Length: 160
Image 1 (cartoon, helix red, strand yellow):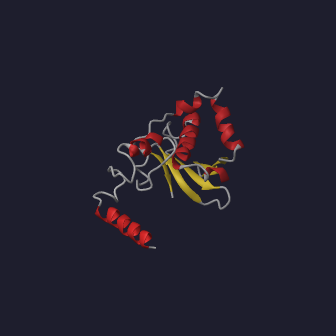
Image 2 (tube, one colour; image 1 turned 180 degrees about the horizontal axis):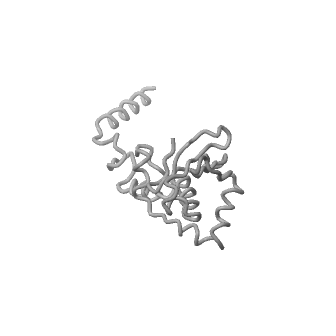
Image 3 (cartoon, one colour; image 1 turned 90 degrees about the horizontal axis):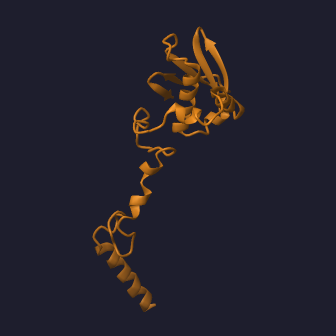
């Protein structure tokens, strides 16, 4: 019993008196080695992870992705778009008083923010909806409630 008390006191003093013990980035004999966190940076996984602290209009500022990255992997552009419909990411394309409306399916919500933006950007690029100047925006609506969930313009995707 005395050994347990001595070990507990020793552990307490080591933890309490160790400078930087609470900081995981500094070296401490009872923690991670120097440089451990260099391999766990989120920027290295930028393609699919988002920082929860970034506002929506800033979270894609450092992304290095182009529509051609996806289009080059398919035999033609329409087969990629058809895949979005087959997998229920997209449901239907309509218009509301001349404004293009895109009804998104159930699996649109299963995508991360990066891929939601990529899908809509690819669709816009293939069909040229906003680039001609005739239509300035695509309205996104939910498949079930038919309520507007967002908007895509030349500036990018904005979700509510």
